[in-house]
Picture 1 (cartoon, rainbow, N blue to C red):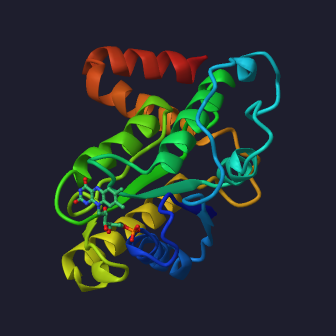
Picture 2: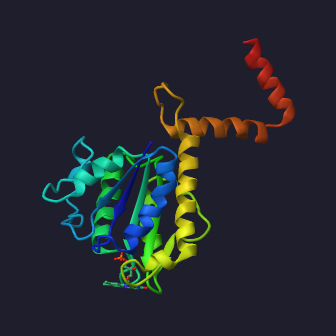
Picture 3: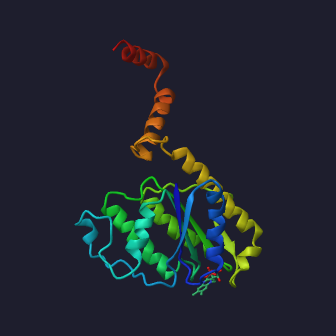
Length: 232
Ligand SMILES: Cc1cc2nc3c(=O)[nH]c(=O)nc-3n(C[C@H](O)[C@H](O)[C@H](O)COP(=O)(O)O)c2cc1C
């Protein structure tokens, strides 16, 4: 199982990075392959609305002059994605917004490349606007069929200067909690060893429809149906 954490803060080693690393601790302990990727401060432009991703088969963006495609390839190879951003005027950083628009668009263009992956958003904030930045990242996940596990609180860490979030004990506990939940969910969704995956969604839907059959089908009809099936 692989998890990729994407840092949208241009401040390397800053609060967002500290939070992302905290989320990765329980995942690493559970045996996940973890990778932290820096996009903040790097060249990554916004979507140009060329719609070329709808025309070709490859799961990539038409802009080849920045880091997006390289990062998106790693996202596609991961079962879980953690997005991290500082709060900038009540929203995500410009680099994170560029990533969200292009990842969401290529995913939709290719029929839902992110569907069934696990996603979590974490935010560094000094005082206000953190939940809005958190929502911005979750909106892309929710539009893309990504499964978002809950935690003990919104995934926010409080601090202004580099390293300040290390004093936000509750925030850090929450990061570890979300990491543990992702590890648990990932294990629950993993296909059996050596089994050729038919996709997590199919397995989940089959299990859900089995349960719905027993919950919603009247008892007598259920018995008749089961008898018919066994006679057949
Ligand atoms: C351009 C800019 C805008 C900011 N806007 C907000 C804001 O709206 N609300 C807030 O609480 N903090 C705001 N901050 C503070 C950062 O969110 C905070 O310092 C955060 O911990 C930075 O995370 P980092 O160390 O990962 O870069 C802003 C900082 C910058 C540089």
